[in-house]
Each structure stands twice: as C-alpha cells, then as structure tokens.
Length: 176
Image (tube, rainbow, N blue to C red; front, side, top):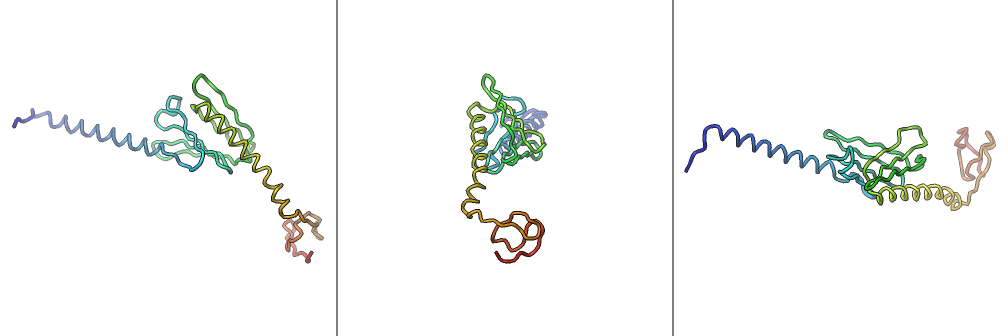
C-alpha cells in the first residue's frame, strides 16, 4: 500500500471541509426556498435581480397579500390586508414581470421582481376576485339577518334590533 506525500492529508481535509460547507449552503438554500404559505404562492424567477439565492414569494389569500423574502438569517414578511390593496401594477418585460401592489393604508407597497407574466396576471386576478367577494359579503350578511335595526333611545345611533347594549354609548337597552 502506497503512502501519500506528507502535505496531502491536509489538502484532503481542506477539500472535504469545503465540500461539506458547500453541501450545507445548498441545504440551507433549499430549506429557505420552500413555500411558506398554503394556497396560491407565486415564486419569483432566480434569473431576476435580488432573487438569485433566495427568490421572493408572494402569497395571495382571501384575507391578505403576503410577501416573503428569505434571507441567510431569518426572513422578511410584508403583508397587506386584502381590503387595503389600492392597486396592482404589472410591468411586463421581455421574459419576466415586476409586480407592485400598492396600499391605501399609507404603508410601503409590495414590490417584487421576476415573476412570470402568467403568475403576475393571476396575482392581479386573485386580488380582484377576493376584493369583490369581500365587498359582497357584508351585503349578503345583512340580507340574511333581515337587516332589522332600530335607533338607540339614548344616543340615537342605528343599532341591531336584537341588541341588549348599545355599541356606541354602552347603555343597557329596553327590550325591542
């Protein structure tokens, strides 16, 4: 059996350590890139700026729009309630699209680069669909309750007919 030259063992340990480090980086990258939210999650392309190692993810749910930005340590999350979404802008390039979701609440908009064109339009359709459903929900809820209301005898605000305490002035009400 041949023996290796004296300096070769150190080189082999360094190569093994570098291979283990590369494997660890790959595992961390894969773990950070898994989808964080159930439902409609749109992942940006790795070919776009800012998405090479950890691509941005945007989840659109019936109640909110959430942007996830994975990082080496932790992640950034930015969410906007679906009723506070003011507009959705799509800037389509040759291959990929940039999506800007602006809010009516005064916070920063969600900006994400590098989504496929189909994903960008699907995001916009889902947001509009959920906003429409949310706007129609109070009307159907009031119609199902019969919409029976009365005026509070103390503060004159409109309250539900079955209310026992006024939600405005907090006083006990006589039976209707």
